[in-house]
Image (cartoon, rainbow, N blue to C red; front, side, top):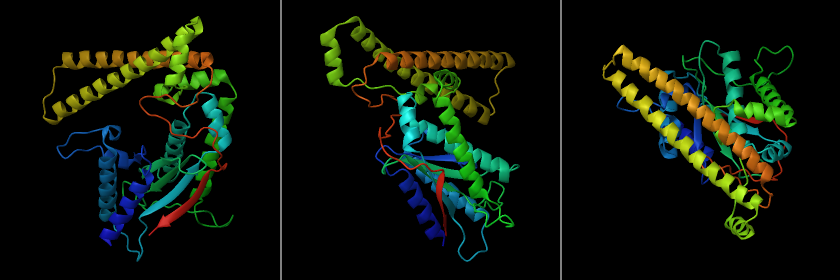
Length: 341
């Protein structure tokens, strides 16, 4: 049974990240568990290779189920769901310069957070998911661990009627996802709301997408040498430079947090004055990062307004979007739930 469970978990992790640039992501208590390294230090899952992330998710999931064994003959290994984005929303997001992948990422995590708050308020759930572009619509495959952090059973059923004693988890999940889709629909109707939303998000530099200049575009701009062409080249280069600078700053901050963690782990407590200075420096650094992100958002917005859309390939360096522009998709919330035994 243990080997069968491990195989099914590995199969999901492999399938969730089956695309050439695909990745499997962990949420809830699972996210916190896979951060832990054998030496006691911590590594953000985003900084782990996809293979390492899959290995840790599979091993952590199985270990958690072993801690809270089921007495059922065919125990549930995972509740599997599919979230899909409509073609209308996909195309509206792209037209507004927003990465549909990022939106689906945040929507899935938001729905799972509401699910945990509703049914496991004093506990935590664990889940893993991956985005796919292999059909006519962008969608996410998600698996929920059937045991909470404290070992309680995590159900995922549909109500059988008004008088049913079954909790309508699936009905609420669908409702929450629909609400999130409607929220984005309202935001996309107002350029002011788009600007306000994006500028306040910590991932604003990754959320915005811009058309990429192909070699042919570059050659045409160089030959043109008009004021508009020069401005477009400069904006494009500014975007690339600023994105690279933001990535570098994030890496420095991550290295600093890791060094502080190791220091605390070894019991090397720094003097109070040193800690105070480091906290002030960290606050200034966070503010600097936000300013860089806001500047990048403004440059991207101006670039999109200037660019003549001859090539709609997305340009983000750090997290390239693979969503096919103009693809068709079904308007759905959570399409299906398959309980794996």
